[in-house]
Length: 463
Image (cartoon, rainbow, N blue to C red; front, side, top):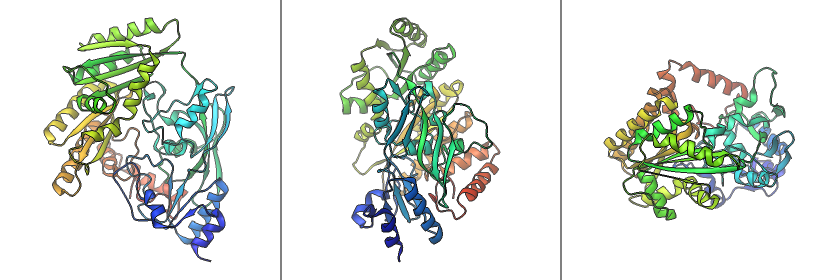
């Protein structure tokens, strides 16, 4: 029996082998692509994945797991061919336990769908990447996704209690549990978060949830100077005002939002600081006034406050859709976007942002800056043109230079997008700067323990 026949024994008609059906699986949201894989399979449960991994282990067939395909660093591109596992059919919410504040969901559940169900019970799952419409439970765990609410709630790693995984050798294992505290040796749950599908296949997860905020208010503060944006958020948080959301957009970002969504901005401004605060009905007005008074110390050209949910939602969706709207700024339809994803401590934010802006201006490459400024996470959308070797080298240098800003300012080259294919060199530079290159060797040894044949997601994080 050949491999395709064995796959059909496991998955029935949920095996794709026609080229035209598999082409979408050669790309994700990044600019990376691969050759056509051997096959794409669509499992419905962990047992089917277990059988697949035993087959692949016996035949040395590489495997790449794909959830929403929203990776921006090439994490879900099958570089070494083999078999792609699509988690699209494992999309059930298995249990919502509000008394214990957790939900159990399969890896293919999309985050927006998860929150839609939780909202019916007055709860929500805080991690909120901009791609939440497509991003899934499994994918967001594998990249330690953050998003807009990370200013208050942190990244995905803070919200995972446990999980079910299938090891590359086929064993089904349970990591973690349903309690907030546990001490039982090495924390394999934490190890899986951010592992980008290189160690095991997450099939379901136990996630912490929280009651929805009673009331939200928003401040829109526009500035001419980038450093004052950074100073505003640093002083805001050090004064005890912790935003529910704190986002930053530069003039290019604002222009793309204006084109895509019709949301205008003051012409004399170069930057927007958007801050949401969460509180009770009784105290929201006072909290918004106190918050705005801190921001006013840093001379915004205009500042406004609203608690109108419809108005807030419009700008919230515009910010989440910024990647798509920034495509409207391309000089030609074949330009693509390379995304910087750095993070620095808030005390370093103001100077790091100024440095990033200056580097972009000197580079001669078109790029916009925006990000989750409340936790020091700044993105840069760099516009690259295919076919030009000179442009490609300039873009690569700019990506490296922006990453080095983070390193010099005690930050990291990847905040929430993972390493994937794109940031392997930057990861090495960060380790080298901190004299921690041996850490990469430790990672490789851990990979060998979990995946002795190196089947899972080859070519990601390190070679």
